[in-house]
Amino acid sequence: MTAYLELNKTLSEEDSSIKDQVHRFAADIMRPAAAELDQLTPEEVIADGSPLWEVFRRYRELGYHLRGMPEEFGGIALSPLAGHFISEEMGWGAGDLAISMGAASMPYGFAARSGNPELVENFVRPFIEDTEGRFIGCWAITEPQHGSDVGFLGNGDEPGPGFDVFAEKQGDEWVIRGQKSSWVSNGTIATHAMVHMGVDRSKGMAGSAIAFVPLDLPGVTKGKPLDKLGQRALNQGEVFFDDVCIPSANILVVPQGYVMIMDFIIAGANAGMGATFTGLARAAFEEGLSYARERVQGGKAICEHQAVQLKLMDMFIKVEAARGLSRAALVYNTSTIPPAPEYSIASKVFCTQSAFEVASDALQLHGGYGLAKGMLIEKLFRDARAALIEDGTNDMLSLNGARRIIDRSS
Ligand SMILES: Cc1cc2nc3c(=O)[nH]c(=O)nc-3n(C[C@H](O)[C@H](O)[C@H](O)COP(=O)(O)OP(=O)(O)OC[C@H]3O[C@@H](n4cnc5c(N)ncnc54)[C@H](O)[C@@H]3O)c2cc1C
Image (tube, rainbow, N blue to C red; front, side, top):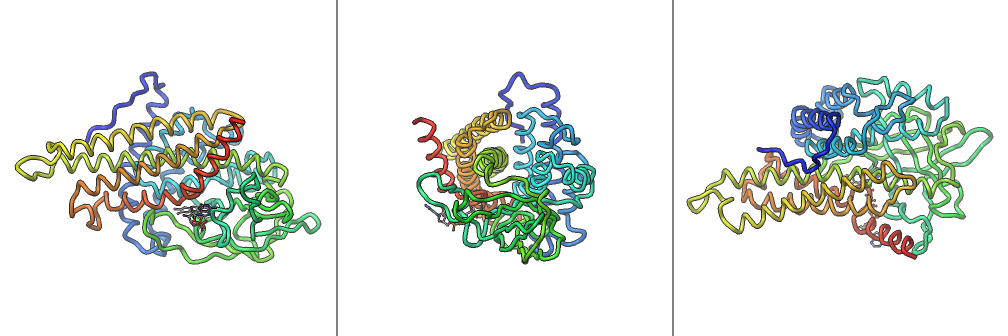
């Protein structure tokens, strides 16, 4: 299968070599591991000896966990475009593992940016030096009663009720109580969490803070790993907080900065999702094209039938449009302060929808074989379906984006 044509003719040598390196990692390590993990139970996925741990180990060995980490703490300086290559290629290899690896770095990146020396010494530096995957982060925002609600910050349409996970200041400590939902990525394997929590109920969601919480503290418990349709290699599960005490130094974002930081989070997370699922769309297109060239019906390869050609071209257009938009949004929003979250939202919504449509068309081109367990296209279709809900449903993100477009134009 030929690689796609790189349309950027001014690519630096460094970016080009990162692209090749991450593609090899995606093809040789991620894809085979994800195929195996897809067939396992959620408990088997995270058991000792599971292929998941080898992916973590190789990912850390290559240093990709340091992208986005400030250079003064040992982060690697990557061009924004190289950041897109890493996400797209990893999404091509396995969307579920790409999300798991990305979420695993989140709390440490925020802790590094907080500049707090205790967090840096105790958690950021050990994470940077961890080549085994012993330090695993998660982003705990969704709650059983607050899924789509978390995106509304009292900006007009909705007052936005506050988080059920609530923290009270007691002396020099904060005491956290409540539950995060079973959707927390890496939830049952994480060692540290970036926890969104209410601190001022009078302000609804806007009265929230974000804390760095080690998950071995007394009072933390976890649920069972979630069993789900797609992205099965991505561990997910509940995290419970029962009077968990953290020092004030672990507060990463105070309520006064919460709404502003949410813009950065929305811009960053959605840009990453757009790039990752561009990769999945490309993988699905390649599967469809390859099968259409091989499968003979009516005396010729099905790619020679015009109706199939129309479908292939439609899929190709979606993949290229997804790459163009997701590159532009990620490059802009990782190099501009303040970011423009509506562009990242547009990228997430368009790229995940395209990935789903391309995967569905590619599955259709496979005929009956497309439904068979063990066929890559069957897995890509299920993985793409999950992405329409992941990190905010596409409907809710679109409403959030619309609000921003209207406000920016006024
Ligand atoms: C693969 C995957 C990975 C995830 N990773 C994480 C993670 O790392 N951390 C984390 O905390 N969470 C994570 N999530 C959770 C995810 O962000 C939520 O599932 C998502 O925000 C939707 O919340 P919900 O499931 O509670 O649905 P609900 O909010 O209950 O929504 C149900 C339906 O109602 C619609 N709806 C709700 N409110 C409105 C409204 N006001 N107007 C119109 N329609 C509305 C929604 O669009 C949706 O179709 C993940 C989810 C998935 C699928």
